[in-house]
Image (cartoon, rainbow, N blue to C red):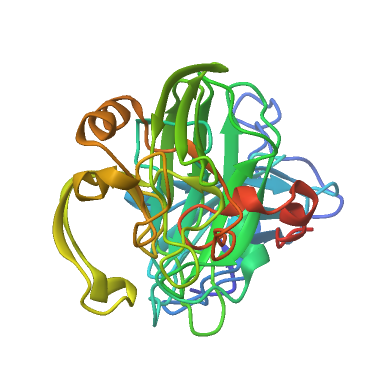
Length: 382
């Protein structure tokens, strides 16, 4: 594409002399002079990841349209002097664009260009799932396939809206898998009934060296359900489910054995998934070959393997002592009742003297163990 194209009918005028007229001697109606634009991106291998800039050679722009076929259009703004239009978002990789511009005199011009395809593409995984209902501690969590070096550019593209203007912040962390992750958590637990929407306008954003471009947008919406908190007191060997501040369940449990690697975690963990009946093997959590069991009513609390679940083999210790391999065990009946009532996203607030530490931010959803002031500092946008 030429850097500056001129289209339309070319008009000429002589200085002095009579004005043009029609056959009746009346002045001929004036015709719009052509507009002349230049575009910062040109050709068939233009650089992606940059805003599109359209500049008018003379006069003032009145309208600019930048379309990308089925990928839609780029919105943008005309500068105060009327000479330049700049897109709000960057041009995406591997995309053909058509530019149409009109000036204040009615003249028009067009241009086109195609961006180079991405050498490397970054993708992501969103939680929670779309149109789900979750507990009051569930963060909005994004795990990236590739490293994100330009965290500020990525975070700027993530738009969160809530039905009740909940205060919250993004915070960057390392996921348990070792990948880059960013979570949006409210200052305090969500209010029941809150509706949350994420519009991740990432198409055309470069995640930085080694990460590659994003080549699509993402979106999700979820709703907060009942206000529930599970309180686990490892010193008293009790678990209580509270709903709207009222205790609806209080049962004996047995936590992790004190004095070694079998201790439980403390702090706030978030129910990640209700996995039902699963095979638990000790070697998967670094405890040798001490057990290999099918376990019912399994509720995952951390990526490192801490669950709340049925543990009938440990019945002699319920309410008496902590004697598990790190999980919170209870009777079949009590586990079934908790499994039925608990929601993914419910907080498990775990206290106890003999634990192996606090649940880390990336080991499940441990962001609640970071103070609000510190969490805000983890935003790439300050």
